Length: 425
Ligand code: PMP
Image (cartoon, rainbow, N blue to C red; front, side):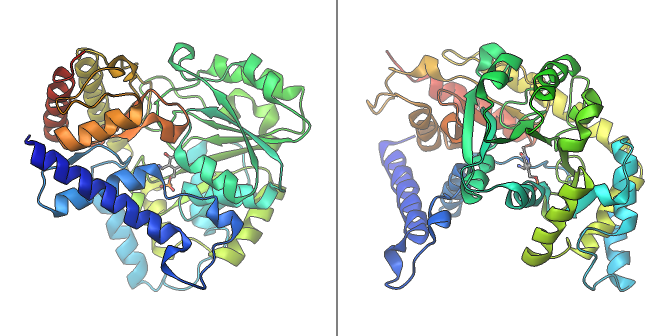
Protein backbone atom coordinates (compact mmCIF):
# COMPACT_ATOMS: atom_id res chain seq x y z
CA UNK A 1 0.00 0.00 0.00
CA UNK A 2 1.27 3.47 -0.79
CA UNK A 3 2.32 5.95 1.89
CA UNK A 4 -0.44 8.27 0.68
CA UNK A 5 -3.14 5.68 1.25
CA UNK A 6 -1.74 4.74 4.66
CA UNK A 7 -1.64 8.40 5.63
CA UNK A 8 -5.17 8.90 4.34
CA UNK A 9 -6.42 5.91 6.32
CA UNK A 10 -4.89 7.22 9.50
CA UNK A 11 -6.45 10.65 8.96
CA UNK A 12 -9.89 9.10 8.42
CA UNK A 13 -9.40 6.87 11.47
CA UNK A 14 -8.31 9.65 13.79
CA UNK A 15 -10.78 12.19 12.43
CA UNK A 16 -13.52 9.70 13.06
CA UNK A 17 -12.41 8.91 16.61
CA UNK A 18 -12.20 12.67 17.24
CA UNK A 19 -15.76 13.11 15.99
CA UNK A 20 -16.97 10.33 18.25
CA UNK A 21 -15.14 11.90 21.20
CA UNK A 22 -16.74 15.23 20.35
CA UNK A 23 -20.16 13.62 20.56
CA UNK A 24 -19.30 11.98 23.87
CA UNK A 25 -18.00 15.15 25.54
CA UNK A 26 -19.66 18.48 26.17
CA UNK A 27 -17.81 20.21 23.33
CA UNK A 28 -20.81 20.65 21.02
CA UNK A 29 -23.33 22.38 23.28
CA UNK A 30 -23.18 25.16 25.84
CA UNK A 31 -25.85 23.79 28.18
CA UNK A 32 -25.50 20.06 27.74
CA UNK A 33 -23.94 18.31 30.73
CA UNK A 34 -23.40 14.61 31.14
CA UNK A 35 -24.05 13.08 34.52
CA UNK A 36 -20.95 11.94 36.38
CA UNK A 37 -22.12 8.35 35.99
CA UNK A 38 -22.58 8.67 32.24
CA UNK A 39 -19.28 10.50 31.84
CA UNK A 40 -17.51 7.43 33.18
CA UNK A 41 -18.94 5.30 30.37
CA UNK A 42 -17.02 5.26 27.13
CA UNK A 43 -18.05 4.25 23.66
CA UNK A 44 -16.81 0.66 23.44
CA UNK A 45 -13.43 0.19 21.78
CA UNK A 46 -15.06 -2.52 19.66
CA UNK A 47 -17.64 -0.03 18.39
CA UNK A 48 -14.89 2.53 17.72
CA UNK A 49 -12.88 0.07 15.66
CA UNK A 50 -15.95 -1.14 13.79
CA UNK A 51 -16.99 2.44 13.07
CA UNK A 52 -13.49 3.34 11.87
CA UNK A 53 -13.54 0.29 9.58
CA UNK A 54 -17.00 1.22 8.33
CA UNK A 55 -15.84 4.78 7.58
CA UNK A 56 -12.92 3.46 5.55
CA UNK A 57 -15.31 1.12 3.71
CA UNK A 58 -17.61 4.06 2.92
CA UNK A 59 -14.56 5.81 1.48
CA UNK A 60 -14.23 2.86 -0.91
CA UNK A 61 -11.46 1.05 0.97
CA UNK A 62 -11.52 -2.73 0.95
CA UNK A 63 -11.44 -3.14 4.74
CA UNK A 64 -11.87 -6.56 6.31
CA UNK A 65 -13.29 -6.19 9.79
CA UNK A 66 -12.92 -9.00 12.32
CA UNK A 67 -13.99 -6.74 15.14
CA UNK A 68 -17.49 -7.81 16.11
CA UNK A 69 -18.85 -10.95 17.68
CA UNK A 70 -21.93 -11.96 15.80
CA UNK A 71 -22.54 -15.12 13.79
CA UNK A 72 -22.53 -14.57 10.02
CA UNK A 73 -25.30 -17.17 9.62
CA UNK A 74 -28.92 -16.16 9.00
CA UNK A 75 -31.59 -16.51 11.67
CA UNK A 76 -33.30 -19.88 10.97
CA UNK A 77 -36.29 -19.52 8.60
CA UNK A 78 -38.75 -21.23 10.97
CA UNK A 79 -37.86 -18.65 13.63
CA UNK A 80 -38.58 -15.75 11.29
CA UNK A 81 -41.85 -17.43 10.23
CA UNK A 82 -42.91 -17.77 13.87
CA UNK A 83 -42.22 -14.09 14.52
CA UNK A 84 -44.25 -13.05 11.48
CA UNK A 85 -47.10 -15.35 12.46
CA UNK A 86 -47.09 -13.88 15.97
CA UNK A 87 -47.25 -10.33 14.60
CA UNK A 88 -50.13 -11.26 12.27
CA UNK A 89 -51.93 -12.99 15.14
CA UNK A 90 -51.92 -9.75 17.13
CA UNK A 91 -48.99 -10.37 19.47
CA UNK A 92 -48.12 -6.71 19.07
CA UNK A 93 -49.18 -5.28 22.41
CA UNK A 94 -47.10 -4.81 25.58
CA UNK A 95 -45.85 -8.23 26.60
CA UNK A 96 -45.55 -9.26 30.27
CA UNK A 97 -42.52 -7.47 31.76
CA UNK A 98 -40.97 -10.71 33.01
CA UNK A 99 -41.49 -12.52 29.68
CA UNK A 100 -44.37 -14.63 28.35
CA UNK A 101 -45.10 -17.75 30.40
CA UNK A 102 -44.71 -19.86 27.23
CA UNK A 103 -41.18 -18.56 26.60
CA UNK A 104 -40.14 -18.78 30.25
CA UNK A 105 -41.40 -22.35 30.32
CA UNK A 106 -39.34 -23.19 27.21
CA UNK A 107 -36.27 -21.51 28.75
CA UNK A 108 -36.66 -23.54 31.94
CA UNK A 109 -36.92 -26.77 29.92
CA UNK A 110 -33.98 -25.84 27.67
CA UNK A 111 -31.76 -25.07 30.68
CA UNK A 112 -32.26 -28.51 32.21
CA UNK A 113 -32.39 -26.84 35.66
CA UNK A 114 -35.12 -27.57 38.18
CA UNK A 115 -36.69 -24.09 38.10
CA UNK A 116 -40.08 -22.42 38.37
CA UNK A 117 -41.33 -19.56 36.17
CA UNK A 118 -40.73 -16.96 38.90
CA UNK A 119 -37.00 -17.79 38.70
CA UNK A 120 -36.74 -16.69 35.06
CA UNK A 121 -36.66 -13.21 33.51
CA UNK A 122 -36.68 -12.45 29.77
CA UNK A 123 -34.79 -9.30 28.77
CA UNK A 124 -33.76 -7.27 25.72
CA UNK A 125 -30.61 -9.32 25.15
CA UNK A 126 -28.23 -10.92 27.63
CA UNK A 127 -26.75 -7.46 27.97
CA UNK A 128 -29.88 -6.20 29.68
CA UNK A 129 -29.90 -9.22 31.99
CA UNK A 130 -26.46 -8.17 33.25
CA UNK A 131 -27.46 -4.52 33.46
CA UNK A 132 -30.71 -5.29 35.34
CA UNK A 133 -28.87 -7.50 37.81
CA UNK A 134 -26.29 -4.81 38.60
CA UNK A 135 -28.87 -2.02 38.80
CA UNK A 136 -30.98 -4.14 41.13
CA UNK A 137 -28.20 -5.11 43.54
CA UNK A 138 -25.29 -2.67 43.54
CA UNK A 139 -24.87 0.23 45.94
CA UNK A 140 -22.01 2.70 45.34
CA UNK A 141 -18.70 1.16 46.35
CA UNK A 142 -19.86 -2.47 46.29
CA UNK A 143 -17.13 -4.66 44.83
CA UNK A 144 -17.44 -6.98 41.85
CA UNK A 145 -14.68 -9.45 41.03
CA UNK A 146 -13.94 -9.65 37.30
CA UNK A 147 -11.23 -11.93 35.87
CA UNK A 148 -9.34 -10.21 33.02
CA UNK A 149 -9.54 -10.35 30.10
CA UNK A 150 -13.26 -9.65 30.24
CA UNK A 151 -15.95 -8.58 27.79
CA UNK A 152 -15.59 -4.80 27.43
CA UNK A 153 -19.16 -3.98 28.48
CA UNK A 154 -18.65 -5.49 31.95
CA UNK A 155 -16.42 -2.65 33.09
CA UNK A 156 -18.65 0.08 31.66
CA UNK A 157 -21.77 -1.47 33.18
CA UNK A 158 -19.99 -1.68 36.52
CA UNK A 159 -18.91 1.96 36.26
CA UNK A 160 -22.45 2.97 35.40
CA UNK A 161 -23.87 1.10 38.39
CA UNK A 162 -21.18 2.71 40.60
CA UNK A 163 -19.62 -0.60 41.56
CA UNK A 164 -15.92 -0.96 42.25
CA UNK A 165 -14.46 -3.39 39.74
CA UNK A 166 -11.88 -5.71 41.28
CA UNK A 167 -9.93 -6.93 38.26
CA UNK A 168 -7.89 -10.14 38.52
CA UNK A 169 -5.40 -10.62 35.65
CA UNK A 170 -5.62 -14.17 34.27
CA UNK A 171 -3.02 -14.56 31.53
CA UNK A 172 -2.48 -17.11 28.81
CA UNK A 173 -0.28 -19.23 31.14
CA UNK A 174 -3.31 -19.77 33.36
CA UNK A 175 -5.50 -20.58 30.35
CA UNK A 176 -7.11 -17.15 30.91
CA UNK A 177 -8.97 -18.66 33.90
CA UNK A 178 -9.33 -17.52 37.52
CA UNK A 179 -7.83 -19.83 40.14
CA UNK A 180 -9.44 -20.57 43.53
CA UNK A 181 -6.43 -18.92 45.23
CA UNK A 182 -6.88 -15.72 43.24
CA UNK A 183 -10.59 -15.71 44.07
CA UNK A 184 -9.97 -16.21 47.79
CA UNK A 185 -7.45 -13.35 47.85
CA UNK A 186 -9.83 -10.95 46.08
CA UNK A 187 -12.89 -11.41 48.30
CA UNK A 188 -13.61 -8.72 50.90
CA UNK A 189 -16.62 -7.83 53.06
CA UNK A 190 -17.76 -5.55 50.25
CA UNK A 191 -17.70 -8.19 47.51
CA UNK A 192 -21.15 -8.48 45.98
CA UNK A 193 -20.62 -10.55 42.82
CA UNK A 194 -18.12 -12.71 41.02
CA UNK A 195 -18.65 -12.26 37.27
CA UNK A 196 -17.60 -15.33 35.33
CA UNK A 197 -17.94 -15.85 31.59
CA UNK A 198 -17.52 -19.32 30.11
CA UNK A 199 -16.91 -19.87 27.25
CA UNK A 200 -15.31 -16.44 27.47
CA UNK A 201 -15.20 -13.35 25.33
CA UNK A 202 -12.51 -12.36 24.24
CA UNK A 203 -10.41 -15.52 24.80
CA UNK A 204 -12.81 -18.42 24.19
CA UNK A 205 -11.46 -19.94 27.42
CA UNK A 206 -13.72 -22.45 29.15
CA UNK A 207 -13.97 -23.43 32.80
CA UNK A 208 -14.17 -27.22 33.22
CA UNK A 209 -16.43 -28.88 35.79
CA UNK A 210 -13.35 -29.26 38.02
CA UNK A 211 -12.38 -25.59 37.60
CA UNK A 212 -15.88 -24.54 38.65
CA UNK A 213 -15.89 -26.99 41.58
CA UNK A 214 -12.63 -25.40 42.81
CA UNK A 215 -14.14 -21.90 42.69
CA UNK A 216 -17.36 -23.15 44.31
CA UNK A 217 -15.39 -24.51 47.25
CA UNK A 218 -14.10 -21.01 47.99
CA UNK A 219 -17.50 -19.42 47.44
CA UNK A 220 -19.12 -21.78 49.97
CA UNK A 221 -17.00 -20.17 52.68
CA UNK A 222 -18.15 -16.65 51.66
CA UNK A 223 -21.96 -16.75 51.67
CA UNK A 224 -22.29 -13.01 50.93
CA UNK A 225 -20.72 -13.38 47.45
CA UNK A 226 -23.15 -13.98 44.58
CA UNK A 227 -22.24 -15.50 41.23
CA UNK A 228 -23.07 -13.93 37.88
CA UNK A 229 -22.39 -16.70 35.37
CA UNK A 230 -22.54 -15.43 31.79
CA UNK A 231 -23.07 -18.53 29.64
CA UNK A 232 -24.17 -16.82 26.42
CA UNK A 233 -21.66 -18.92 24.40
CA UNK A 234 -22.87 -22.25 25.83
CA UNK A 235 -23.72 -23.63 22.41
CA UNK A 236 -20.42 -22.57 20.87
CA UNK A 237 -18.30 -24.99 22.93
CA UNK A 238 -15.68 -27.31 21.40
CA UNK A 239 -15.00 -28.86 24.81
CA UNK A 240 -17.66 -30.30 27.12
CA UNK A 241 -19.67 -27.39 28.54
CA UNK A 242 -20.56 -27.30 32.25
CA UNK A 243 -22.91 -24.68 33.63
CA UNK A 244 -21.81 -23.19 36.95
CA UNK A 245 -25.26 -24.11 38.26
CA UNK A 246 -24.70 -27.77 37.45
CA UNK A 247 -21.19 -27.70 38.93
CA UNK A 248 -22.47 -26.22 42.20
CA UNK A 249 -26.26 -26.75 42.53
CA UNK A 250 -26.05 -25.92 46.25
CA UNK A 251 -25.08 -22.34 45.29
CA UNK A 252 -28.13 -21.86 43.03
CA UNK A 253 -29.78 -19.63 45.65
CA UNK A 254 -27.08 -16.98 45.01
CA UNK A 255 -26.38 -17.49 41.36
CA UNK A 256 -27.68 -15.80 38.21
CA UNK A 257 -27.24 -17.71 34.96
CA UNK A 258 -27.20 -15.46 31.87
CA UNK A 259 -28.01 -16.84 28.44
CA UNK A 260 -29.92 -15.96 25.26
CA UNK A 261 -30.53 -16.65 21.59
CA UNK A 262 -28.07 -14.11 20.09
CA UNK A 263 -25.03 -16.32 19.57
CA UNK A 264 -26.53 -19.83 19.38
CA UNK A 265 -29.30 -19.08 16.89
CA UNK A 266 -27.75 -16.13 15.03
CA UNK A 267 -30.33 -13.74 16.50
CA UNK A 268 -28.23 -10.79 17.67
CA UNK A 269 -30.66 -8.26 16.20
CA UNK A 270 -33.73 -9.72 17.87
CA UNK A 271 -32.38 -8.61 21.27
CA UNK A 272 -33.53 -11.49 23.41
CA UNK A 273 -31.80 -12.94 26.45
CA UNK A 274 -32.72 -14.33 29.85
CA UNK A 275 -31.60 -14.74 33.42
CA UNK A 276 -32.25 -17.71 35.70
CA UNK A 277 -31.81 -17.17 39.42
CA UNK A 278 -33.48 -16.99 42.83
CA UNK A 279 -37.02 -15.56 42.73
CA UNK A 280 -36.14 -12.61 45.03
CA UNK A 281 -33.39 -11.46 42.64
CA UNK A 282 -35.56 -11.99 39.56
CA UNK A 283 -38.35 -9.95 41.17
CA UNK A 284 -35.96 -7.06 41.83
CA UNK A 285 -34.71 -7.24 38.22
CA UNK A 286 -38.27 -7.25 36.88
CA UNK A 287 -38.95 -4.06 38.87
CA UNK A 288 -35.91 -2.34 37.31
CA UNK A 289 -36.79 -3.53 33.81
CA UNK A 290 -40.44 -2.53 34.24
CA UNK A 291 -39.45 1.09 34.78
CA UNK A 292 -36.70 1.20 32.15
CA UNK A 293 -37.81 -0.70 29.08
CA UNK A 294 -40.77 -2.98 29.97
CA UNK A 295 -40.88 -6.49 28.53
CA UNK A 296 -38.69 -7.57 25.62
CA UNK A 297 -40.23 -7.21 22.15
CA UNK A 298 -43.28 -9.46 21.76
CA UNK A 299 -42.31 -10.73 18.31
CA UNK A 300 -38.77 -11.45 19.51
CA UNK A 301 -40.23 -13.49 22.37
CA UNK A 302 -42.28 -15.50 19.86
CA UNK A 303 -39.14 -15.95 17.75
CA UNK A 304 -37.09 -17.15 20.73
CA UNK A 305 -39.85 -19.60 21.66
CA UNK A 306 -39.64 -21.06 18.14
CA UNK A 307 -35.83 -21.22 18.35
CA UNK A 308 -35.88 -23.12 21.65
CA UNK A 309 -38.74 -25.47 20.79
CA UNK A 310 -37.89 -26.08 17.11
CA UNK A 311 -35.25 -28.33 15.52
CA UNK A 312 -31.86 -28.11 17.25
CA UNK A 313 -29.66 -29.82 14.64
CA UNK A 314 -28.48 -26.43 13.32
CA UNK A 315 -26.53 -25.93 16.56
CA UNK A 316 -24.23 -28.88 15.77
CA UNK A 317 -23.92 -27.90 12.10
CA UNK A 318 -22.90 -24.34 12.93
CA UNK A 319 -20.60 -25.47 15.72
CA UNK A 320 -18.74 -27.73 13.25
CA UNK A 321 -18.30 -24.76 10.90
CA UNK A 322 -16.97 -22.55 13.72
CA UNK A 323 -14.60 -25.32 14.81
CA UNK A 324 -13.17 -25.68 11.33
CA UNK A 325 -12.61 -21.90 11.16
CA UNK A 326 -11.01 -21.91 14.60
CA UNK A 327 -8.59 -24.68 13.64
CA UNK A 328 -7.60 -22.81 10.51
CA UNK A 329 -7.22 -19.39 12.18
CA UNK A 330 -5.20 -20.74 15.13
CA UNK A 331 -2.84 -22.71 12.85
CA UNK A 332 -2.32 -19.75 10.51
CA UNK A 333 -1.65 -17.23 13.27
CA UNK A 334 0.79 -19.55 15.04
CA UNK A 335 2.63 -19.96 11.77
CA UNK A 336 3.35 -16.21 11.61
CA UNK A 337 6.49 -14.74 13.15
CA UNK A 338 5.99 -12.80 16.40
CA UNK A 339 2.42 -14.01 17.09
CA UNK A 340 1.34 -16.64 19.64
CA UNK A 341 -2.23 -17.90 19.54
CA UNK A 342 -3.70 -20.16 22.25
CA UNK A 343 -6.34 -22.65 21.10
CA UNK A 344 -9.72 -21.53 22.47
CA UNK A 345 -12.21 -24.04 23.87
CA UNK A 346 -15.31 -22.12 22.80
CA UNK A 347 -16.94 -18.93 21.46
CA UNK A 348 -15.76 -17.52 18.12
CA UNK A 349 -12.73 -15.45 19.05
CA UNK A 350 -8.99 -15.92 19.25
CA UNK A 351 -6.88 -13.80 21.58
CA UNK A 352 -3.26 -14.03 20.39
CA UNK A 353 -0.28 -12.30 21.92
CA UNK A 354 1.36 -9.65 19.72
CA UNK A 355 4.10 -8.87 22.24
CA UNK A 356 6.62 -10.44 19.84
CA UNK A 357 6.12 -7.46 17.51
CA UNK A 358 7.03 -4.88 20.17
CA UNK A 359 10.19 -2.99 19.24
CA UNK A 360 9.83 -3.86 15.54
CA UNK A 361 9.57 -1.16 12.92
CA UNK A 362 6.86 -0.74 10.31
CA UNK A 363 7.74 0.03 6.66
CA UNK A 364 6.92 3.69 7.49
CA UNK A 365 9.58 3.65 10.20
CA UNK A 366 7.23 3.67 13.18
CA UNK A 367 8.02 1.46 16.16
CA UNK A 368 5.33 -0.88 17.51
CA UNK A 369 5.21 -0.54 21.27
CA UNK A 370 1.74 -1.75 22.21
CA UNK A 371 -1.27 -3.81 21.12
CA UNK A 372 -2.96 -0.54 20.12
CA UNK A 373 0.00 0.30 17.83
CA UNK A 374 -0.16 -3.17 16.32
CA UNK A 375 -3.92 -2.93 15.62
CA UNK A 376 -3.55 0.59 14.20
CA UNK A 377 -0.75 -0.63 11.93
CA UNK A 378 -2.91 -3.51 10.68
CA UNK A 379 -5.85 -1.21 10.01
CA UNK A 380 -3.71 1.31 8.16
CA UNK A 381 -1.35 -0.99 6.29
CA UNK A 382 -3.34 -4.19 5.84
CA UNK A 383 -6.89 -2.80 6.03
CA UNK A 384 -7.75 -5.41 8.66
CA UNK A 385 -9.74 -4.33 11.73
CA UNK A 386 -8.97 -6.09 15.04
CA UNK A 387 -9.51 -5.04 18.65
CA UNK A 388 -6.52 -4.37 20.96
CA UNK A 389 -6.36 -6.47 24.12
CA UNK A 390 -6.26 -3.42 26.40
CA UNK A 391 -9.99 -2.96 25.64
CA UNK A 392 -10.55 -6.26 27.46
CA UNK A 393 -8.24 -5.50 30.37
CA UNK A 394 -5.23 -7.50 29.10
CA UNK A 395 -2.82 -5.51 26.90
CA UNK A 396 -0.23 -7.22 24.70
CA UNK A 397 -2.90 -9.17 22.82
CA UNK A 398 -5.58 -8.59 20.23
CA UNK A 399 -8.97 -10.12 19.61
CA UNK A 400 -9.94 -11.51 16.25
CA UNK A 401 -13.47 -12.77 15.72
CA UNK A 402 -13.79 -15.67 13.29
CA UNK A 403 -17.55 -15.33 12.91
CA UNK A 404 -16.84 -14.38 9.32
CA UNK A 405 -16.81 -16.33 6.04
CA UNK A 406 -13.89 -18.64 5.26
CA UNK A 407 -13.17 -16.45 2.23
CA UNK A 408 -12.85 -13.28 4.31
CA UNK A 409 -10.80 -15.12 6.94
CA UNK A 410 -8.38 -16.53 4.37
CA UNK A 411 -7.92 -13.12 2.79
CA UNK A 412 -7.62 -11.38 6.16
CA UNK A 413 -5.03 -13.86 7.44
CA UNK A 414 -2.98 -13.40 4.26
CA UNK A 415 -3.03 -9.63 4.83
CA UNK A 416 -2.00 -10.01 8.47
CA UNK A 417 0.85 -12.32 7.42
CA UNK A 418 2.10 -9.80 4.84
CA UNK A 419 1.96 -6.97 7.38
CA UNK A 420 3.77 -8.98 10.07
CA UNK A 421 6.38 -10.15 7.54
CA UNK A 422 7.00 -6.50 6.62
CA UNK A 423 8.08 -5.59 10.19
CA UNK A 424 11.81 -5.23 10.71
CA UNK A 425 14.12 -5.17 13.74
N1 PMP B 1 -22.08 -11.52 27.29
C1 PMP B 1 -21.02 -11.67 26.49
C2 PMP B 1 -19.78 -12.30 27.05
C3 PMP B 1 -21.06 -11.24 25.17
O1 PMP B 1 -19.98 -11.40 24.38
C4 PMP B 1 -22.23 -10.64 24.68
C5 PMP B 1 -22.34 -10.14 23.26
N2 PMP B 1 -21.20 -9.70 22.68
C6 PMP B 1 -23.31 -10.50 25.55
C7 PMP B 1 -23.20 -10.96 26.86
C8 PMP B 1 -24.59 -9.84 25.12
O2 PMP B 1 -25.41 -10.65 24.35
P1 PMP B 1 -26.78 -10.13 23.77
O3 PMP B 1 -26.59 -9.92 22.31
O4 PMP B 1 -27.76 -11.24 24.03
O5 PMP B 1 -27.15 -8.89 24.48
